[in-house]
Image (cartoon, rainbow, N blue to C red; front, side):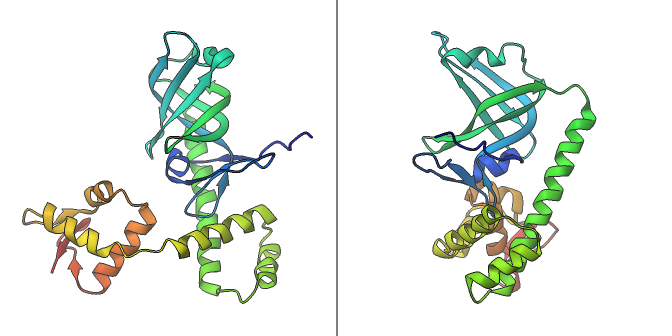
Length: 242
């Protein structure tokens, strides 16, 4: 039985790298589930080549691309290893491929790899991804806020907003996982602030990197600390315990 071609989604590299990989069996495709409720099985990524590798036996090759949000490896095996031959570090490229996971690393198996000569294409890609994420965030926040009473009401909302069944299921799946895995990270963040603060507070960016939390989870915990008066911002982008 022939499987349907998976929908291609333009995405930031960070969405693929930091998403939760959901492994499926049989004909159903595996995918990355993002914090905003997107299922990405087949990604369209655009970034700069920052590393290139070929194994000694020629049975494995990879490149690493970076788009300022994060970096990801694109891997090729056996007869496909020459797909990166015409690429060099510093090239801006578009990659279309299937998302896979191994040893807790999300990566891409390429179907299409293409150099991008026109810098306007890179800008267009970023704008399209940004607009898509903003729309997705609005829908997710509305569904969270509404707290629909039953599945039928949720389906009606999806129909009114031209959402297909897959998009609806992905958002429901995201909200279910979010509810199940909700954890109070404020004590951990407070401990980190105490350890890292040398007198002038700690930058949000450093805390986010050190905590290794998803950005939305980190922001939620920080906002609670600020709103509850446990911490304050001595200067913009810096947090300090009261």
